[in-house]
Image (cartoon, rainbow, N blue to C red; front, side, top):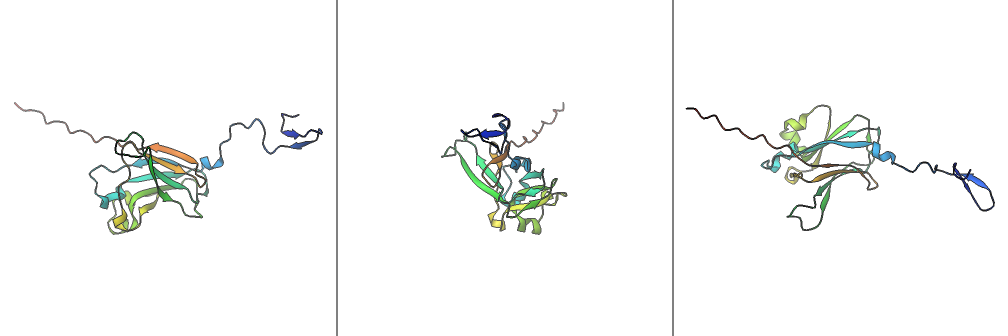
Length: 181
């Protein structure tokens, strides 16, 4: 019975094991709590005043406490302007405690709540979501996401729960007007 959930000492006495040896693939319950749904990077010509048009959307999959979960911005390795192999920063941290219900969506904007209250964009008013903002004062708003960056959802223990590469859709090219003869 050694392989059936009991640990034996040298004297032949057995005691139950806390985990079965058959449980080799362990996935923490944290991984099922939330995930990144989508990211919307603002076009390059967007001014910082309109940073609320840029956001990451998360969906809560399991009612739970998301205390100290964070959204991380990672600048990719292959960018020539990056001096270090990777540059990263914490973008948003859920407070403690932060009880969320299954099915809730959070839209985390790069801009300011003050800006959203004074001059809301359509993205600030999207129904069915809880809107949160990275920047406090309007002057702190900035655009974060560029093509090739990564957005990570990290739990309170530092485990990467979800990761998405920022790859905005290309703007449609204008077709030339037909030549009339």
